[in-house]
Length: 112
Image (cartoon, rainbow, N blue to C red; front, side, top):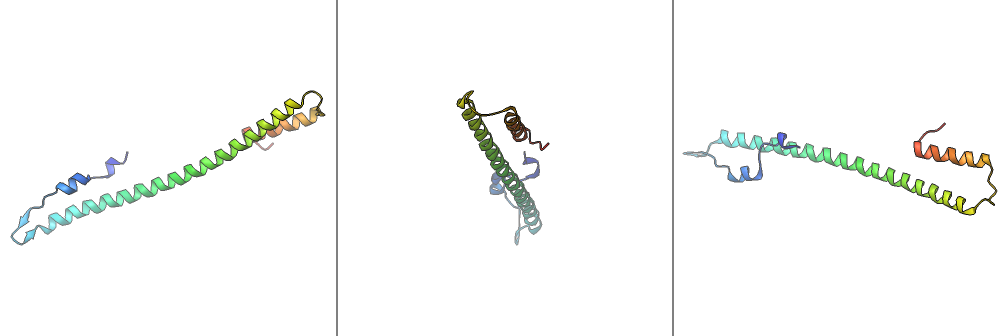
């Protein structure tokens, strides 16, 4: 997924051998390699930020779905209680139409 942005693996870093000059390692080679590591770390930071944002959005969506789920359970429980009250309950057609309208608003999210 993100491998096209990352150039080095931990094993690459561990196994890197620099050429030696009489005064030590070649500075240009070490600088070039460190630039690659910095680029990878920058990529990692960007990936982490993106994933943290996505995670926060998913948590928010989950909470909204949980709230909607609770509303639907309450509506179902209310409907069951109404149906258990039987034909002797004092409900007229207007009450039933209002209840159906409220159910449709909850299910379809429409405010008509």
